Each structure stands twice: as structure tokens, then as C-alpha cells.
Amino acid sequence: MSTFLPQDSNDNPIPALRFKNGGSHSISAGGVSARNATAFADGTRIISVFATAPIYMKFGDAGVSATSADHYFPAGVYYDLSIGGDNTAHYEHIAVLAVDGAATVYVSEKE
Image (cartoon, rainbow, N blue to C red; front, side):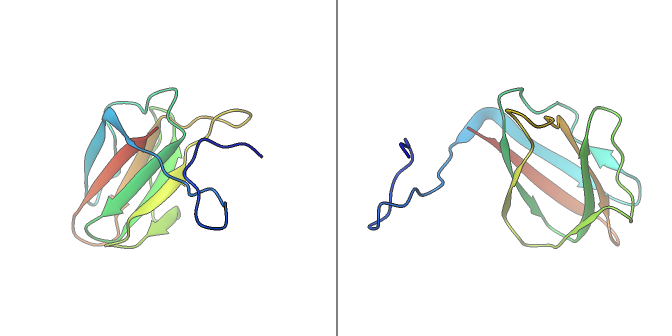
């Protein structure tokens, strides 16, 4: 399979994406659900997430809201996530809710 990604010494592709200019988001998470104010770009398929404290998160459209029944995301972890594309739905927002207290959630769109 042909790829434009860099390859390791065994010729396996190394998933490497760059930060998208203008694709940086910061969300203040607390006791009420909050989401990114600006939608992710249509062409964005991967985002990176980092939270300063544990949160719950959920992906969706402009009306998405996170609850304690949604996905738990721990503090201090830098993680890449797919937000769709090609034959799957494309999520344009991430909603976050702090597990306890407050957190800042940093989101970077990648291309």
C-alpha cells in the first residue's frame, strides 16, 4: 500500500499529522457541559485532546452536551481521536464536563 507518511526502519507507516493553522481550541470544563465555540473544519479527521483534570466528553453537532454517562477522559493524557470522514459521520464539536471541580481542555485539529 502506497503512503505519503514517513516510514520506520521496517517500512511501516508512522502516523504523523501536523497541526492545522487556526485549529486550536481551549474549553473551560466545569459542572455544566461546555463545548468548542468554533466547529471543527470539514476537512479535519483527527484531533488531539489534553485535559488538565478528568472530564467526561461527547462528540456531536452544535447542540451536543456532555453528561456523567459519557466517555471518561483522564487528566494529563495527550490523545489523538478520529472525528470522522469519508464514509462516517463528521463530528463538528466536542462537549466536556469536569468530573470534579474544573479543568481546561486543549484540542488541536490536525491535517
